[in-house]
Image 1 (spheres, rainbow, N blue to C red):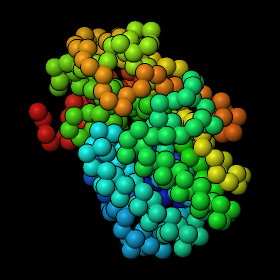
Image 2: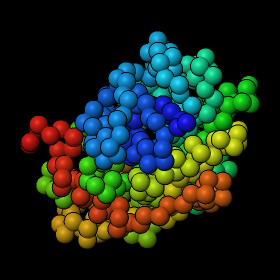
Image 3: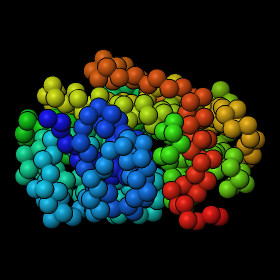
Length: 343
């Protein structure tokens, strides 16, 4: 009999792609999402691609009574926990909102899981927990220190989950520390749909290419990197989704709790990304070099060997696929999932 996975934040960018991977692998999926930063249309597209029905519950991770009902009405075998606010700049302005949603929300979820006897959890963490990394490539054993409330909220949840496991060793938890997710499903039907101004580089570049924005601001051109712009480890969202599936399957071996990087191990600069996107789209990307942003680090890329040895996972899609798939999504969906709002 197939297992049923509760996916919190399952209508979001990484959540939708992971739901597809779960369906491909024969799992049943229940999505919990409050649609504060996502669209029900995304789940309709998942159904269109997979030919499977998504059981969707609209509601908030902090609604204890709702979570109680979800666990009572569905036989949940494990949880993949994406639900969280994720804009670094916004977290600095609204720390209470971020801690309430990301930390308290996880407490509410874990309490409901405990009452329901569900002990397997894949947690969506972030490479931001390394702060300005002590050395490169970034290994899991490096000291953690977040530089903003978003990163601290992820780190607090990691520590909270470590304490939960220490108190009850029947919990099995994968703390997946992602680097920079980009790209979209090759169908062009689902992808990253930021509300308002994109916080991440790739959707911003794509919006410049499609004519929604006049130019890209490149924050900092004087970093100690090959071309002076910030270097990051970009990972295709399809590879990232596969990492969640592998982590979920790995939990069956009762491994306890482990932090695992999901990245490619390669760093690309902002200018590298612009060039690659120009090649994929055939469009010129106008950009301006501006001052550094506070809190940005010069370089950050993963050592992904632990994921290879423990999960049997490694990133397979390169920069060309990341840019080509992002561009296809952008061209097919110039206004994201908001099909009624033709700007």
